[in-house]
Image (cartoon, rainbow, N blue to C red; front, side):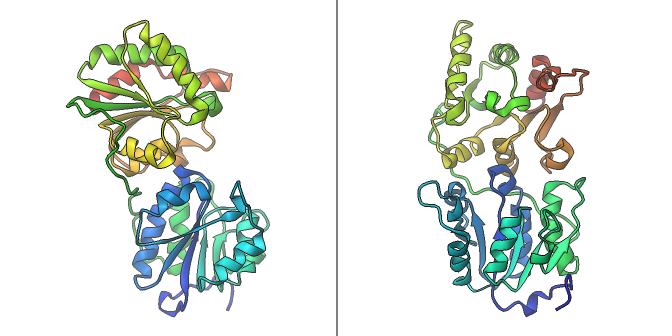
Length: 334
């Protein structure tokens, strides 16, 4: 078959594989592409190859089958050949490779998957049957969907919404107050981290203006100590806030964010959870790992506060977003 020939979905005999990125936010942004595949292949089994830490979250969607990529199992990692053997047993005919690494394309090639779609990045074009040129100005969700749409003759005219499977969180109080979550990130988030002094000013002002809200700080275990230090300083101002940083698993974090009435967050995985769960949120956008224009959620129920100051130090850029701006945005959304 000539490379890049349009794929006729009716002629695909085996199952479908989607090779997912490694981060939760990127994985959530792949859900529109998976929806497209469900439409194109309603009678085929759709597998997703996911990092072990994402398997539990993805397994909630009973319309797909999850294969753990045990090359990245921290306890018992397997070889590329062993992982390819697992894929062979799944009778896969078509692979959509949404991560732009050489190893993912090599894995699908070694697994002898007939059609292998991906971007012509990192010298992997010879390993692909359909190698598209990447336009780095395209939004990430557009990039993922384009791999499916263009190789199938462009049957879609719009991108579906992102989606997460969430349950009601047991970490939130049972009172009737509105639940407002906060994720300022830790110093591990580098230039995306919202500085402690501004965070304190923000939460003091919000607590004063919204006594009808319960406030929750969220974060991963590496951010727990910083969150505790922040809350200790807030306690001196009689600001009541619950610290859940480091207290939740990834799945519990997903349910928590999806159960909030409003979320204040840096550009992050939890932000994409809120967008997919249709939770109103305020995004604090400093210098991210990708341009904001390529990662901004494709939703309408949020306000993005994008740093646009004249600071020459990268870590200082986010200081352009003032506590008063955050409070004003919260007032508009809540």
